[in-house]
Image 1 (cartoon, protein in one colour):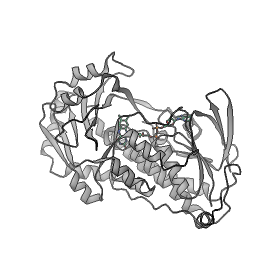
Image 2 (cartoon, rainbow, N blue to C red):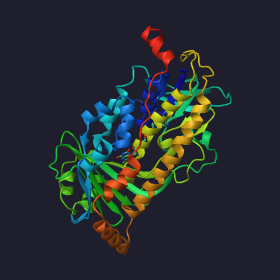
Image 3 (spheres, rainbow, N blue to C red):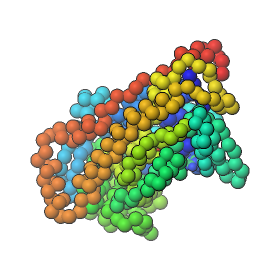
Image 4 (cartoon, rainbow, N blue to C red):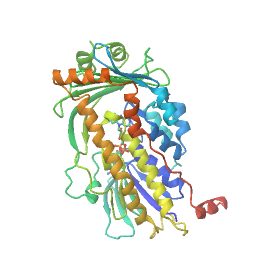
Length: 419
Ligand code: FAD
């Protein structure tokens, strides 16, 4: 069986989904509302589960080449005292791959380049999806010039982010994302910085500063603060200096190597109320649309990558031999409904558990502000047995990706050059 899917959203989740579906023989169109396809965020770390998903999608090696393995680092106090150490080599021994750090733009590029020209349509905002026919979905799109178009698909994947418009089709009445209580300023340095460790987190009172070193010697840094929502600073870099400039090295050097205009500032939102389902009819939610979480475990994108591989594997597993359809001829692709049930069953419990754990990690880490609670946390971290950090990471990062293979019928057609 193969079919035609429309993916809404060209972020990490949407692009990964398109790659996965194409790998199992589906035809895919990604509709992205932005005029240019480019992830402007700073940097990202990918745990073993994310890397294994990228390997299953066939793009892991390319990402590794552009990334820097994160072997050394841990957690410190603002004065530089060591709270916990992270042994990246031990993680690599346990999981076969270390955590890697990569600029978001480089990850995005690696995903984009795995898709053929024309697969991603930019400047196309999805305004509605009609699910009234149980065997197909109708997607309405508005383009920049004010015109609209409609497409029919065997499957629509809503990878439209934390503020997903399509989420309401799956969970009408859901309250939507909630403000986490934390706001984040972040940037990539303009030039290489000498760093003693690949990555570091420093916890103060209701505040966190972290860095991730990149392969080219530059680094991303992020500064997270407890804050009411919507607070903005006239000069975000000056404000970051005011709050964190007195913290231990290399924090002042990271800020000195940053251009004022390079600092991004976002409030962090998450889905506190878990969704009762990730699917409705021929629509599947994926990535932040399904399970937006706080960044405290560095797992949001990794979970989106897991979603993408799991969805493609479920479709491949539930398919029988059948006709190859094209974008202009969607039909009742057999097995899609069973695959969506499987996707929901495999992904919802795991991603929601990771989201809960991320919130909890934030409560015990960055968000903690009472001096006594901070002192107790710091003491607990100092006396924790060595290896505790690695074990905590293993809890979420040790995920095995299913293999993605094209169905036999598609392989045969492709070997004969039939489209
Ligand atoms: P998005 O990246 O939000 O993409 C959604 C896309 O859909 C956008 O391009 C948007 O323009 C498009 N769109 C929306 N609506 C429509 C529409 N109606 N029609 C067409 N297009 C539409 N995760 C990690 O794994 N590791 C980390 O180290 C990490 N660090 C993080 C640090 C911070 C500060 C934050 C905030 C998050 C971090 N994350 C991390 C989480 C990660 O960034 C997200 O989970 C991930 O980017 C979500 O990808 P997505 O594709 O689901 O959504």
